Length: 257
Image (cartoon, rainbow, N blue to C red):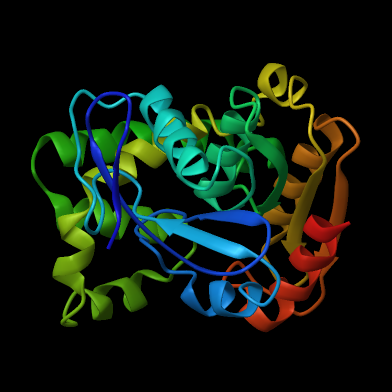
């Protein structure tokens, strides 16, 4: 597996495949290189790059964390892809892509699937309370509780979360629980970073699932309204866990357009 070195010396693991223009995929919270089914479909038209964000999978981590370090990580992946690449982000990864597109000239086009700017729907106080509690739990070393808090905040029923905590995959979530704080920093106060978004000068596509919670659909609309010239689309029947078969042709059409 190739490894690159980010600006601060952090080793970032990545993989790539396919043929055609470079396209980088950016994961959301608690994921690393989770978009393999999507990548497999897109590799028909693109050279697809997927990487482990810092603190996850095979990538390293270098404290203290700052959002700018993750922007630099993505910049390094774009450089490895030849210096110019389209970028697609999912959930909090979409928020990172938005921030990066305002700072990285090598990004040629972006697509965002449901960036969770939930404060756009009104519950700014709830987002603030979540952030404070998350950092309390992480500081206390209560990683399992931090993961449970995140999942509950994301809408997973408490009973389902309790069941998940008994499953073999739960320790893997706990291992990367500190990165929930990273995603929280990327999202800041939970609203669209308007000043940054207005500086994005590349074509943008913002997507939401028609079966997703209204708060996420509203967040996607808000992001599209702020990004200059952005296209907003709703994938009917899709949820936050979007199917690769529904997403891939939409991305291919946009990025090849």
